[in-house]
Length: 115
Image (tube, rainbow, N blue to C red; front, side, top):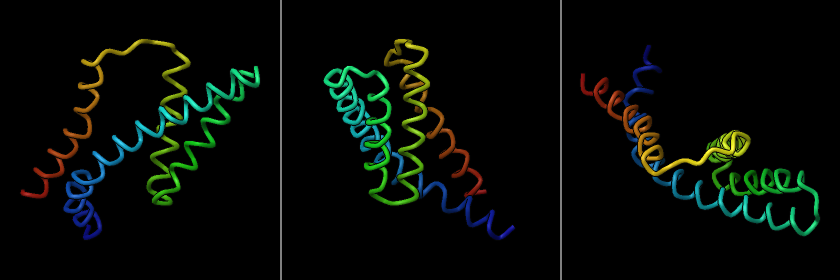
């Protein structure tokens, strides 16, 4: 129970500082990884090269903070591949709505912490 209490009290602080960094750094490096993969795929004329190179670059960029950022980088890569598989176009309203999940988590954990 003590571990759970410590987790709840530390989670808002972690989310407050890590979320913007993960979002900005993750999006920039993900775009960079995908563009490098696309360029090499066009140059080599093998479509599978794109996701292999992109995956390697996601992992390389993910090693900046070792395990924590590596997990986020792998998650970015998996979500990116799933979204590319369905080939849907997303609008800014959907992106803003997706930000409600971490903000909602932060509010829930802050509420539990203050109770």
